[in-house]
Image (cartoon, rainbow, N blue to C red; front, side):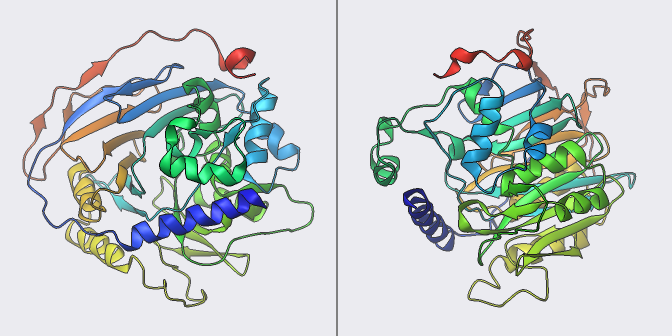
Length: 409
């Protein structure tokens, strides 16, 4: 009960911060982005303290988790995974608070594939890009807000954790990167898998989701994304998975999902009175797409961002990478957009822009056998050759199947 009260307080603080935010960035300057090509290893690497990236190879324990019946709360899921990997960890707290986000799917400039764009809007935090190569599922790129998993306390009563977070963060234990990497498997906020399926979770302002259909496993809001990325190749397969689990909201909030595949099919998945409703849409922000949702004081929240993205899609029916980046930049929250990502559903790549800096992009490939290309189209009218700087690092030869028990006792 104490942890639930803490969650509610954090939710209120987060919501107020978004209400006071200015949602639209109208002062875009015409610039060309430089792109860095980054290669992941099993070590957690970082760039200028603004971006971390890593990979996982091995058994991520998803199958065992689902076969066990799952769980209706985030912490049990984290502890299940860590314990299954041989770690006895008990001092981790998750803060999966709300977020005001934008996502869309659009045809690419050649008309032979699709881009899936997404802004993650929240208070200042440090993103982690995780490339997962599971033993029993599809490989994927996903993005995690490490601030959600970066608060640990030892010997601190739960009722004091909020005060520590807000006023004395130095009293909280910094979770080691290797442990964050494992927890990140089950806390993705968006991603793309090797079949081109892309997913974004966005918050809506209504009651929590708590399903209890007999005989079905239980998952919470973010682990559901891991399930979809590992197991679904198409929107239809994703919907079938969602229909066959009981979903429980993280932090007593309501969420909806934009799910799109490589064929161009794109839908919202929403929960109305705990029942799933699927609607075709190319855009998702923070209001319900469903006409059956109950109206409240937040029902029009973020419709301005939705309309701006629609205007950009009308202007550019087939978007270049720069057009997609411009669309995301047009709906950034000043100071609160932590990352923007464009997933290439044809080439299985991701380009990130951090903290609303669209002058610098970071590029990741999902599969190593994709051909490198040193030329990136950055303008509708001009092709500019950009030197892609490869950041090399030593490969970690040890598999994650041999997790070291001494990470945390």
